[in-house]
Every structure is written in C-alpha cells, then in structure tokens.
Length: 346
Image 1 (cartoon, one colour):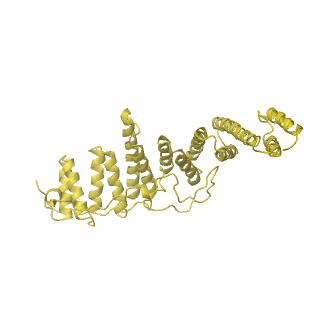
Image 2 (image 1 turned 90 degrees about the vertical axis):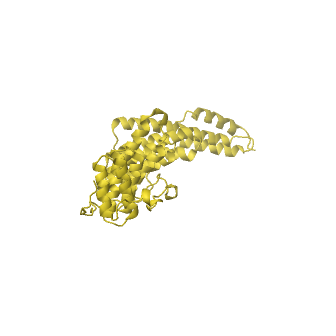
Image 3 (image 1 turned 90 degrees about the horizontal axis):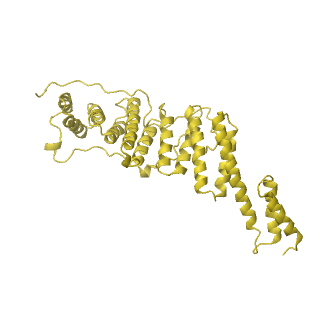
C-alpha cells in the first residue's frame, strides 16, 4: 500500500537554549582546593583536534537503490513512517536517512533525522550509531529540535554504551575512549544540563581506566570549580585526592608533585568534610608528609659528598632540621652535624 496523502508537520522549537552553547557566567563560584581553571573550559577533555566531527550528509551513490523512493520530502516521510509502522525498521531507517540526505533543508529533515536515531536506539539497539545520529541532529538541526530532550537522550545512550562495554568481560575496556568521548560530547553540547556533574565524574573515572591520571585530576578540579554547591563536588574532591596519591605512588621522586599534593590535602582539610572522609585526608597527608621529609632528607644528603664543601652540607642539614624538627631522621642528622662541625672546612 502506497500513501499519496501529504502530512503536515510542525517544526520543533528548542525547549531551552542549552545545546551548542557556551557557559554563561557562574556567580558565587568558590574554586576550592587545587582548582586553577576557567569556568568556560573543560580541561581533561579531548582537544578539538582529536575529535572526528560529523560530516554533513550527502546523497549516496546509486541513488536508484539507496536514494529516496518518493519525489518530495513530505511523501518520503509518509513512506518512511509506513515502513516503520509495518515493522520494517531497517527499511524505515534507510528511508528516513535518504530524506535527510536528499532534502536536508526541508522541514521534514529534522523529524526524519530523529527517527533514524530512535530506530537505532529502540529497535536495532545499536547504541554507538544511535548516539552519532542524535549528535548529528543537535549539530545540524539545533534550532529545529528539542535540544534539552535530545541531550538527555544522548546522556542515556552514553550510559548504555558504557554498560554494553561492561557486559562482555573480554571487552571490559574496549570502548572506554569512545564512551568517554560520548560523555564529553554531551557535556560540551549541553553544559547547563542537570546531569553534567555526574557526567563529569564518569569522564574522570574513564580517564582513570585509561591510566590518564593527570587528565582525571583536571576533570575533577574543573567539576569542583563549576559546581561547588553540588554534592558531586565533594565526591570529586575525595576522588581527586585518591588520584593524586596514585600519581605520588607512580612518581614519588618528584618533589614538586609531593609538595603540591601536600598543599592540596592541607587546604582540603580546612573545609567542611564528613568524618570518614577527613580520616582519609589525614592519612594521605601523613603519607605525603613522610614522602616530603624523605625527599628533603635525600636532598640534604646530596650536599654531604666529596664533591661538596662541608659548609654546604652543614647548611643543608641545618635547613632540614628547621623545616622538619619532628622527622624520624632528626637524630641521624644531628649526629652528622656534630661530625661535620668537629672537623676543618675544606
């Protein structure tokens, strides 16, 4: 059965100006410990150069096979709907897609584009392709669709992509990068949406799965900067501290990192933390302080060698005693100072 009756369509109006827009000013933002980023940036996300931007759809080759079956966008939409209502979902998706490619500026195009994504999501369960089609809808028809609703759908699909990657053990992290970029794409297109803080926690977690710990720290920091009043900010603070301690474990020899981490922990402890979380921060600070003292002791011993003067060693040890009077190395340092002071300076 072929329908010839045209149907009238009403263009969608954007519910909120939230997609494809930059952040407005965020009043009363308290950066908190460690934050050093602007509120309109997303450090820790992939740069634009690394992202593959969707190309505008063009008519396919062999239009007599892959092209539209009807002569107008309105008739093609009716045909595609008929295929969908008949349960021929793959055929319907191709018909909707052909409409978008042949008549990209028609009022039916955004309707057809959403239908392509909906079929992929609900009927074919191809989450990655569904996400790409919803992203195309926002990128090319942001004025003709409900941007807030589409962004919510994209967030949902990103979650399905992540769960799908976890379902099969063998592919546990096979789609980590694609999933992270999906979450990043949603945040960048809808930075004012309510789900963004939770999405950023997920992005940071995925960065950790990739062992990109520096980037994870940047995302946690920026989350706290952008959303200091949200409960996710406290979660981010705790998780960021864990990642910073992981970086110390991997690069404990880096004195600058040790000092920076200790300063971060001390500043966090000046805030209002739950008791259990405060215990973690106290323990981490003790571990960091030990590393800090140990690095300082090694630095002082560096000057106590044949290639250095006694005066250099004495100055280094005396500085160590002033800065770390309770260190476990204090007795050893004092004994060595007595030896150095008892001889003649070279």
